[in-house]
Amino acid sequence: MAQRLEEYAMVGDAQSAALVGRDGSVDWLCWPRFDSDACFAALLGAPEHGRFSLRPAGEVRAVRRAYRPGTLVLDTELSTAEGAVRIVDFMPPRGAAPDLVRLVQGLRGRVELDLELSPRFGYGARRPWIRGRGRHLSASAGPDTLHLIGEVPLRAEHGTIRARFAVAAGESAPFVLTWHPSHEPAPTPPEPGAALEATEAWWRRWSGRCTAGGRWHALLVQSLVVLKALTYARTGGIVAAPSTSLPEAPGGVRNWDYRFCWLRDATFTLLALMGAGYVDEARAWRDWLLRAVAGQPEDLQIMYGIAGERRLTELELPWLPGYEGARPVRIGNAASSQLQLDVFGEVLDCLHQAHLSGLPFSADAWTVQRALLDWLESHWDDPDEGIWEIRGPRRDFTHSKVMAWVAVDRALRSARAGRLDGPLDRWRALRARIHAEVCARGYDAERGAFTQAFGSKALDASLLLVPQVGFLPITDPRVGGTIAAIERELTEGGLVHRYDSRTGVDGLPPGEGVFLACTLWLSDALRMQGRHAEAARYFERVVGLANDVGLLAEQWDPVQRRLVGNFPQAFSHVALVNAALGLSGPAPHRSGRCPEGDCD
Image (tube, rainbow, N blue to C red; front, side, top):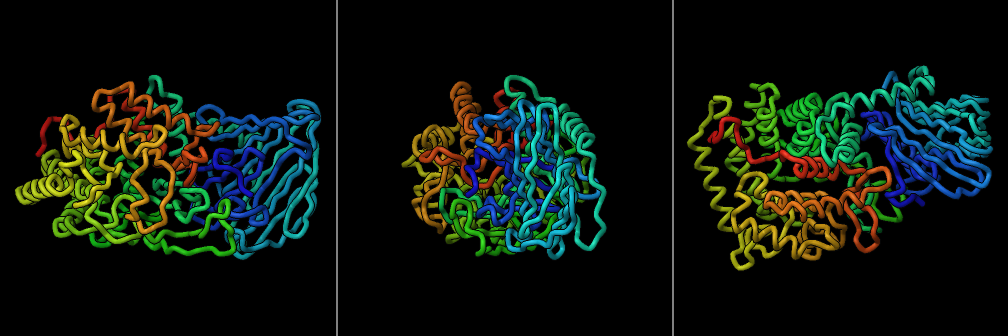
């Protein structure tokens, strides 16, 4: 059985990623891309579904692990009665092929270890043909081949590569695992020592560019390293997580594939990168966004593949029993075909913020913005599936309408700031109409709060963003009432639920964890109200839920007190970066302000 999510760390090369357990087992790896078929899928099943295990033969008495500062190079120290070893795991920056290097170093005494490499291509479905002898074996099935090279004798048994070896203090045993298409010649593997030095230096050069300081500097760097690792280097797209089907509640059915790029993350991600000084990465993300949304506005999707792919067909994999038995296991994501009006606001806001942040203006970007706004003008009042991608009936979600207002507002501000052509008077009238509609139908005077949907009494944590996007000022009593109601009714253990899943609004069985990004949104809202000490407490609660190497999932189960949902989750780390920047000051903002003042 897979371990709790807290037990996993991630290593990656900004094109793919592996999840490595505290027990020395790589239980999840998709090659050559984040969204490729997994060759190790034990995370969603059992060892027979594929893993790469490297562990002491005797009882492990203590485990200590950490990333080397500013890097994604993982050190795991394991102590036994016989001594201690360190396993160094990393993926070198991509050369001709993807590599996973595992270096065993003797620290004390003499420790025997067992190696078990069980490739199972096609998400655990295909047992490979193993060839070779001695210290170099290959495993092939269909289009995939893995090569394992070590400095100890390797043997093949029923589709699994095994070895028993010993390492004494001062000795080392390196292993290099490489993937390549089975119809191509095997690439030259890297030399492990040189690869370690180069990988560590590459990460430190990158993380050393972080310009944000203050009390939260170390946390910022760790989360930014996670975001860099989840960035597909070839295109600039950032996946929501490297995993699929990790349930939002233990044993539940809320199991989705997150190995894609969500437009909803656009502005948050841009602000996080720009706020920390990563202009090149922000530009790459902006450019990915423009390429992905190019086409007809009515064809806009809420998510795309890492190279801008649009066909993300959702399938179930019945041969995988799921993480701790949570079924179904899904690949692809049917939410890609949903109508979610808020993404129009996200796209236009991201492009506007990019311009404000100093990225070069793009005439193509303005063409895209005008086309999107022309379509939104006729459809902003349509019901949709909303920010949480419900699988129940469409509704008039208040957050969706607020973000439609954001889309029009940012187009007006961009036009004024860049002296661009457009029907400005018509857009001003539309902006005023949407604003009035939201205030009239999305606000419940009896409750003193904005509600989840027009005519609803339910609350929704997405409405914490109302002041941040500039829809109403933080001093407006309707904003204050909404923040108070959410803090009163949607918090559990000092953390925030995105909404009450018992209402059935999402068309799914009730039950999920608290949403970590929403808790950080509450921290931001309290900071904007001047309640800095309370904001810091909510922020620190989230930070305290990260595992021992600083990784966060999407949610936290307050009953079983464990991380749940896909892992590690980019949205949680983006929210953490932006909240930390806000608490450190000056705060990033999404109000749409222009450098010279009012731009509308």
